[in-house]
Image 1: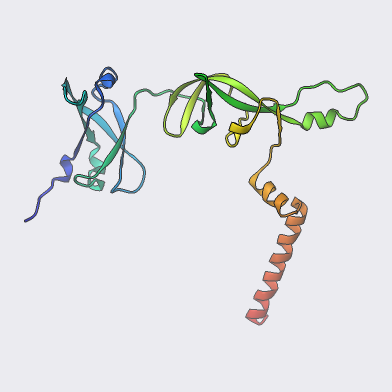
Image 2 (image 1 turned 90 degrees about the vertical axis):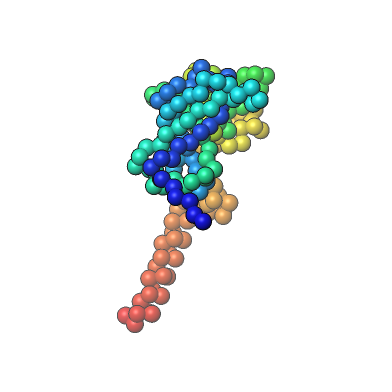
Length: 217
């Protein structure tokens, strides 16, 4: 026996809790990830909302439609994960969700900036002070969020450098150093940037000589 499937008739039904019913409306967008299909999430649209609430589960049946041009990529009875787009905001300030610290129902970020301290007149420590960076814990207000990002409504602006790794062990006022992955690897190898460049050029020169010998030039 076999089944005949009309790939142009695929729909998707979801069952959100009744508490979300006031925020779901016909024509609303959703992002659908399907385990059997590799790649980015597909866009779907709410076609129908069943007005009745299932008394056994407290959920509402919602039917989603896919765009016609992606129907051929879908799979019958495949498992799908759905994210309903409840709201959209333009030019939102987003930070990694893991960078936000929650404490006593408040949310914080660590912002990095130069140390502000007065140097005695004539002292040579002014340049050193200017190069010292301090991590300061700043309370923020958040808005919309997804699995990876969170919107910052108040507390920092787009020019504020923040700590995204290791902030759980930081204290406000701790000295930090701005660096890159390459600089840290060089430091662990005991090389300066100039020494690493010279070593790379020497290795490249040795490689060129080996090529010459192999080709008989």
